[in-house]
Length: 221
Image (cartoon, rainbow, N blue to C red; front, side, top):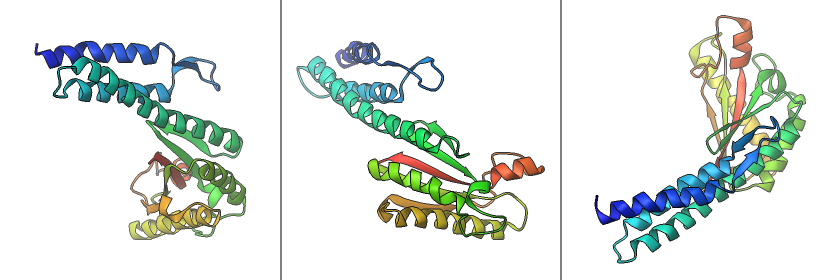
């Protein structure tokens, strides 16, 4: 094993142990102990930083590996914590609205069923969607370092071209409402996916109702 490899071998576990030792948290919704997303980000950042530091051309590779791990951990945990807090606030504000909040890595996904947002075949927002989107906008304005992807989805009833256009108009309606609510247009991206990304069986109405949705995905910048 080369000297650089040995340094990576020892520096990375040390960095990980320092991070994990103080970062176990309790899930406020389940009461279970878990590793937070901020900790996961810190561990990834530490790994990248340690490797980068250890491979640096210097007689002090171990020092650089540890410094790199610390810097990487700070960056990773900062992103994770930023999204953790944003997720918690969204869950609090959207509780009982019918909008689900899920996490995929560092991305937060808000799933808005059509029953909340649009009438059948309509592209104009239901009035019931206003308060929900107002709540989302409040959190988005508080946490501006996120990109906001608004994605429209339909069931498979009707032609593919019709559903594609319908999904685009619905995504635009949601995105434009958020923009009017004070979200910078530079943060917003609206996309229509038509019937191409079902989450349930289109052969039954219960499945089609799940597929008719708008998803708002928040991604760290």
